[in-house]
Image 1: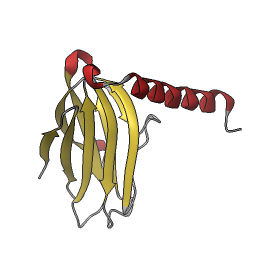
Image 2: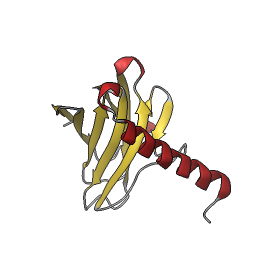
Image 3: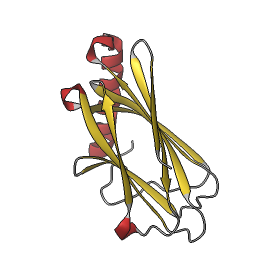
Image 4: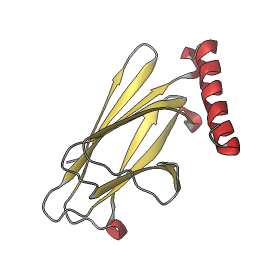
Length: 150
């Protein structure tokens, strides 16, 4: 079963999506679930890939037709017993929009669930220091891509 919940704090919202992919779901017949998020920015994404997946199931996050996660087009998030947490800075046009999770599962016996958390916030809650920290992080990533690891 696919489940979506969200919690609000003073300055952010956490969207919780339990995304289950049935056994025997090939890549070319992937399942999808849309989620509507509110806020001006997605600031963090957390994904739990429980033990037992053994990289047989894959997950992607899309905005429209654009693959956002993983960043390298055509790849899938796969794993086994992993917790992936990273800061993001994805603008949400109009303060509310739909994102789509897509998944496949090559396991012939078991359904597999990805536990996804998306944190959003509004511009009015962003402190200048947060903006500078995020800018520095993005600039550092750009330098790494352009210059390579030093």
